[in-house]
Length: 456
Image (cartoon, rainbow, N blue to C red; front, top):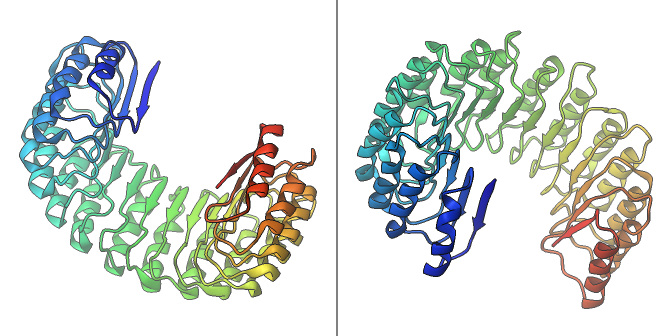
């Protein structure tokens, strides 16, 4: 049983009504509910009074250090069996971290701890690591993103990685760790027997200097499935350093995020060698990199390689034009594994969309999700897509947000959507404007076809 309340400012009467439920449910999520220090004592008592509680999520509430101290006191109860605690953006600072070691020591059932968007700083992180190193602590997943950490936090984290054999996921994105910090983390991982599955280092001020170390970790950790490096200035030279690790026979990486990493067609060429060789890779993001039409052609050629098993490609805002759509069209007609293609923010225009539709209209097309937001699509492009919706039976989701169509184009899509043979389940039209009559038509269409959602 779960108690899920989001974005509701809880009155005293409502809080009194909820307290018995908090003491009964296995999962309690009170997200952005205006909870402050005054109600933390009640929650602390609930942690002790509810031995069935396994998950507590209080993110986006102003608990502050005093509130967090009260809350964590509840973890000391011998009946507390919580496994997942989420307190992102709750106002915990370095001053409140002194209670963390005792709390982590007292609850050996805790496996997941989410502390992002709290200004812990390096001193607070060191206190947290003191608790994580306790033999009674068995945390497997730790999230400390946006926590004002620097390279000084990485040695304590590395010590945790060395000591805790059960550690599976480390999320430290959007902290100024720099190359020196990540080098320390990589040393810790190299010395660790932990079966790390996921490492998130987005927005950590990394450069090509980190890439060889990261590549070595990918090569040595067969357990590593997810590596997120977006929003770091790695450049083509960094990708060249990273790829030998990705190509290692022992690498089993499934998800690789490289959005906004200053990659051009040259770096894309190196990544395509990985795509062709590693069937384990299922998700790739090169969004926000200026790989251009040349990069698009390289990606499409790689996606047709027999050993490429990629299922999701994010290539938003990559400088593509209509000229590359012939390559995407040919690939989509023949590829039997790619299920999601994100092409938003590229100037494809109606001509490019028409070519995409030709490929997707072929009998062998299997794509399920297509994102074409902000691609300069007009009513003419909508006409091509409307015809596609009747010919293609694999496409489940289509995103056309922030394009240039009028009511005419939207109604062309609606005409196809109402046909029994149209399999689309979700049409996304954010930042698209139409008249009241068109809106009434779309609402009536949703009512007549419950499997269809039109999001705007």
